[in-house]
Image 1 (cartoon, one colour):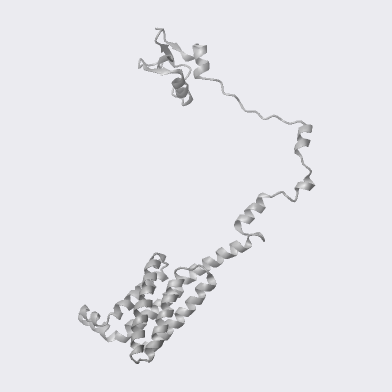
Image 2 (cartoon, one colour):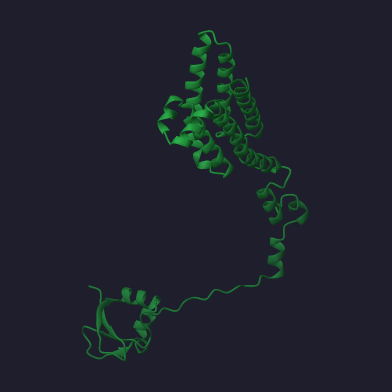
Length: 263
């Protein structure tokens, strides 16, 4: 059975324990006790400072070995100094490592350029989609501007149900304002709006075209172009791909606006 000891501080009668020597060594390591702490075991009635009991002192407060640096002799240093001319080509300087991490070396420059162009794509996608959605809102709202004015004047919001595209235009206007404020959190909703435009408006104009309205064919193509542009611009960070679809979206929504408002 391991020996157990009681301890107390010299200035108090508060006795703690029993503790094993291992526990006391841990308490000493965390400065909970010191050499002046009084110690007593089960067999002795006398309280003595730990520092006065050499055998316990060595166990509870073992001497810590000090680390020292040994200076090598010239012969040892010569063994460490490998031929500098042979190692010079293989040595990697810290500056070179930092330059590689920053993409400022020939080997890593393409990575930095890629990141730069991705950043430009992410930044420019916002205003491009904002312009597309503003023109889209005009295309949906302007043909029914008289109803909008009546709703504003009379407060009869039920009239909007006769022209539901007004709600789509209002929603596009909200999306456009959000994009100009750099609210990228709406990207998933924009993709849903793009899929809705691709499916609903594409089918609507296709059905009207089948009934003999030739303009509906161009409206269908324009709706598909706008929806694809919004969807791709919210997904890709490829600069060329983003610009291509952004231009497609602006041309498509411009065509849609011309066919629904100007004509």
